Amino acid sequence: MPSAPKRLRVAICGAGIGGLTLAVALSQYPDIEVEVFEGATTLSEVGAGIGIFPRPWKIIRMLGLERDLLMACEMKPTEGPVSAFNIRKSDQRAGFIFTTLITKGMMMQFHRADFQKILLAHLPKSCRVNCSKRLRTYTNRPSSPTELVFEDGTRAVCDVLIGADGLKSAVRRTLLTERANWMQAQGRWQEAADIGACIEPSWSGTIAYRSLIPAERLRATAPGHPVLTTPTMYLGKHGYLIAYPISHGKLINFVAFKCRHDLEHTEFAGAWVGPGDKSQFADLFAHWEPEAQALLHCVEKPLRWAVHTVRPLRSFVCGPTALMGDAAHAMTPHQGSGAGQAIEDAYILATVLGHPSTTRETVPRALRIFDEIRRPVAAGVAEGSRVNGQYFSLAVEGVDFDRYSGKQLWDKLQGMHAEVVKNWEWTWTTSVDGMMKTALRMLEAPI
Ligand SMILES: Cc1cc2nc3c(=O)[nH]c(=O)nc-3n(C[C@H](O)[C@H](O)[C@H](O)COP(=O)(O)OP(=O)(O)OC[C@H]3O[C@@H](n4cnc5c(N)ncnc54)[C@H](O)[C@@H]3O)c2cc1C
Image 1 (cartoon, rainbow, N blue to C red):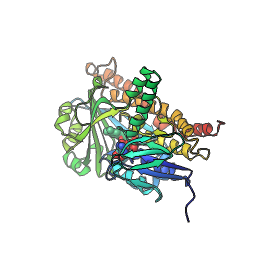
Image 2 (image 1 turned 180 degrees about the vertical axis):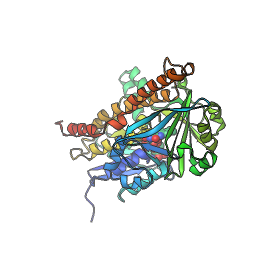
Image 3 (image 1 turned 45 degrees about the horizontal axis):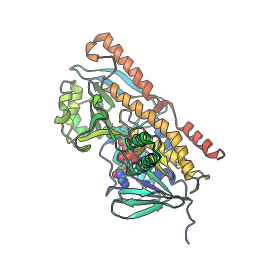
């Protein structure tokens, strides 16, 4: 028997954490057809860890993903205060813990591949995930379906296109180019130029070196190293290290950040992501404390990642097309929140698209509600993350930490930590409930 016609056909471009979470969230609505188009030949997340804070974790729970994700880690989510990270000052021979980041509920830490596998396992059979389908461009015509054009020359149609295609998003390129052209045609040259400037990502001045260290290797090098059990951040001038156990303690997720904030928005020469070499960052950390050295000693074949961001957009949507996740607001990783923000986007997008008032005709309105709710939140998180990156590399305006010692140094570090917490606590003190209520109120308001 032929199945009932679907209310909406949604195409999701990109099968990263954002795109797959959206596909899972939309699968609650049987009258929405979902098809995912992924440019890569296979689905394989980069071999690295990912942390999810309490605010997006609540969404994970609501989407029914919690039980399976918990089976992929040692951690149990808690509601009360927990120590998330020990934070050390490490750019000296004798480093010391100067604070512990206390969060309400813990940051859940995973191997990205495990996370992706679980998202895929939760997709219904009706949701097709097509690999080797790299979007080149798309066209929106009034009263016609959106047409997607792939690099291999094939095409597809949909009622709603969601660009979850990451930092170098092809959907963002088409959406912003069209809007800039339109502005130009209206003689609004400055606006056209401002929009055009957001098409290409911008270098943050920071390079991340990521590696997964086998816990056995660290144990052999430094028996009882605190990172085997305790997430830790090692701060110093011009960079920092972050390390925590994942995969039932078998691996240590390690990232070294080399920060040149003065180079923000300059062009990064060379490939943005590629194999790295310890020699590219060892110099910066050469005089750091032994605990940091032990980690650096265990790093093999790091992946080098020039951290790029997307400049704040004036809108994430245009007609029946929307951007989400890194495609919309790629941010620095200094609040461990880029994927969390993609998860929040997915949840609100599914809410507005799934709402019974949303039809093919009213999709643009639903997407504008998504934009109005999510864009300011993501922009605030991106800015907070940028500032955190400065604090973690001890770049605090008016404070030269080298000039202080003893109680004075301690007080300066405490002052900085207080700012970090003020900046970061949104992710464990607030929830997505408010956004959700606003979305429903707006959807149910008379047009
Ligand atoms: C060092 C580092 C550490 C981080 N740590 C954390 C953390 O602890 N917690 C956290 O929340 N976030 C963290 N982030 C940020 C997080 O990784 C990203 O924000 C998140 O992965 C974005 O997900 P996404 O689905 O939007 O994009 P992506 O993960 O980039 O997925 C995009 C997908 O689209 C595909 N694609 C691209 N172009 C096309 C095309 N033209 N057609 C079809 N498919 C296409 C890609 O192959 C990819 O599969 C970190 C980032 C970095 C760099």
